[in-house]
Image 1 (cartoon, rainbow, N blue to C red):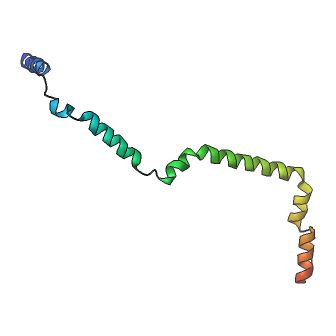
Image 2 (cartoon, rainbow, N blue to C red; image 1 turned 90 degrees about the vertical axis):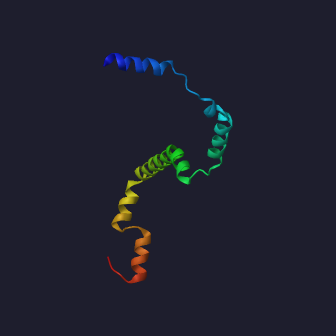
Image 3 (cartoon, helix red, strand yellow; image 1 turned 90 degrees about the horizontal axis):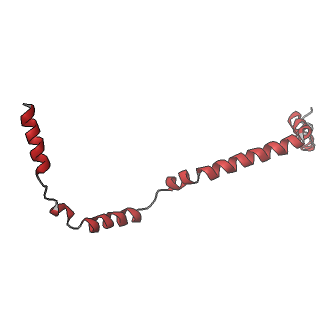
Length: 99
């Protein structure tokens, strides 16, 4: 049985396939497909994925800038939260609320 299988494999290797029909116009078909792929519109999210590192760098830079700005004047932030700023005093005076 193994001999029959070996003979079939040997015959299959020896047989030459007729690829002339497939080869005809291969370059033309390939170039036409490449041109059609290039002419398709690129979706907007493809650009978003390409620009993701830029967006991440901007977010990180804004975070560092915000942290550096807040750390330079912590007393102002505490007083604004506590309601002791000039704007909160003016708002409480205009609305008639007492602290």
